[in-house]
Amino acid sequence: MLAIENYHRALKKLCGVDKCKIRKESGQRNHIDCSLRAYIRLEVVHKEQNISIYNTKWNIIRDTIGRYVQEPKYAL
Image (tube, rainbow, N blue to C red; front, side):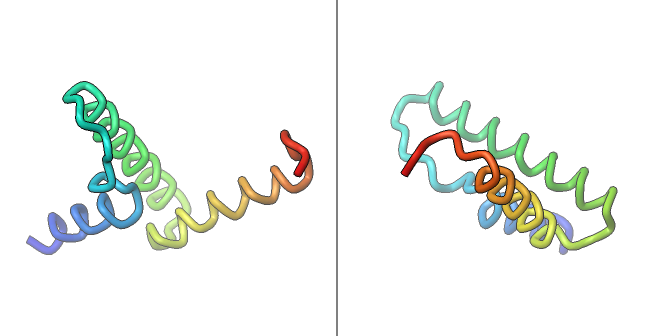
């Protein structure tokens, strides 16, 4: 039972599956699909690097911000 609870907690907290503001059914399905894909990607990296799923998300965010700072797409 603990694994299912961890899955639901991570899906909500890390992937934002519960933050859908769309009313149309197709938009909600797309949002859930994207959230599930994000969760699966986090799990794959989590298993490959053998670190917590929360650190996995932070590493992805940190790397992305670092790349953007080096080569910004938009001028502020």
